[in-house]
Length: 160
Image (cartoon, rainbow, N blue to C red):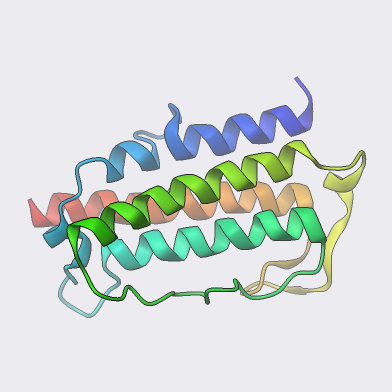
């Protein structure tokens, strides 16, 4: 299996496959209600909806970086606003995360030979995720999503 195929497998497992660490993001999100999605736990932590939009923003940004190279903040912001809450809007947000994952997968399939070892951006900027290789960035996105998916799973457990 090539490194590109291994990365695609890792990203798919975390998103809607069978990751070794537990449920995939899609499984975790599959039964989240509108009330759970919009609810904020005590202490002002992010809602499930905010976490989903944050993951979508970074998935879109990483896909763009793979295609275009130049790193930046996500076009929709680090923590995009939720907007008016409704069942339709919530389902649209979940669907948009699916679309972002599909775009990322397509971008990874289009990686140039040797691109995995190239650096994304010049200097190391941890919050922006620059100064690492494309390989590190893609593994980092899978780790980022596993982390936030775990938060969502904990919030669901708390609310139920």
